[in-house]
Length: 300
Ligand code: CP
Ligand code: NVA
Image (tube, rainbow, N blue to C red; front, side, top):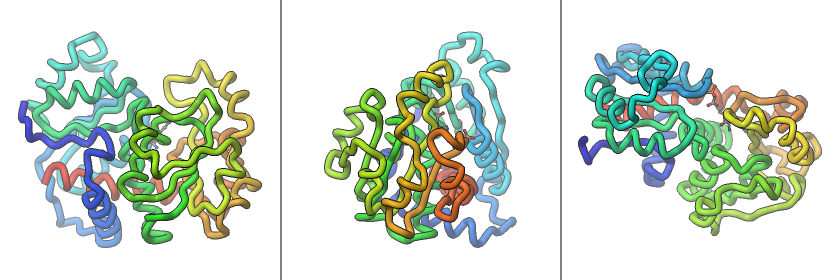
């Protein structure tokens, strides 16, 4: 185990300056794609997905190909991980053969344990606690469309989940004001909130929270692994939809973001997600560019 190995398990593994440099680099990689630029030639990324993925899988795999490397898709069903081989042993073995490991899993402790025993960088591709890769793309998208996000108002409506926690961490690094509006029993993690308490204001209703916002964000009411709670969550979140009435409270040039996949008619109305303020597809595409910048930072 190399103590100096650099991992990306949380946005807070980056300094504020590194985060800003990374999203600027992502913009530059997006606009000047040079097929001869192959900084990761011969390098291999192992991608372990214990949950489904469209964007994360495709963007990392494509990013590695663009950079001259390759990516291995590993599902626990087809590896010994799914049959109970200890994480510590798996991390040692896999990291002895590849240059970087992406892990999408349930408990955050799984990625931290994995990283402790990996001799190569480990990237958090989503846990129940955090989804840091998505924020690289979201902040790139805001910068491209509206410039510096510092001192702007970002409003989070819905579940106090992994995406909400990642917006809290980004607020710390980029110094925006974060309005949070979640049902009482679905508030974000208190420790994470405490760490950014100067940036955060809580609201009881989505319309109050969205007032004067520059960016409104939401996510599904039931995340992966919570499918059985879907019906009960639909009741709890019924008043927490981002719809035209909510967007009307925000600034006229406010953007709407959602990490996708989305459920139209639940957390967001079709009118909003398919409307002119929505930038969800630019956000999705930027996963590719932002993660190429991340791979460069960790591996070059
Ligand atoms: N937003 C996101 O991470 O999408 P996938 O689940 O498709 O990877
Ligand atoms: N909160 C969602 C994000 C999906 C990209 C989930 O964890 O399922």
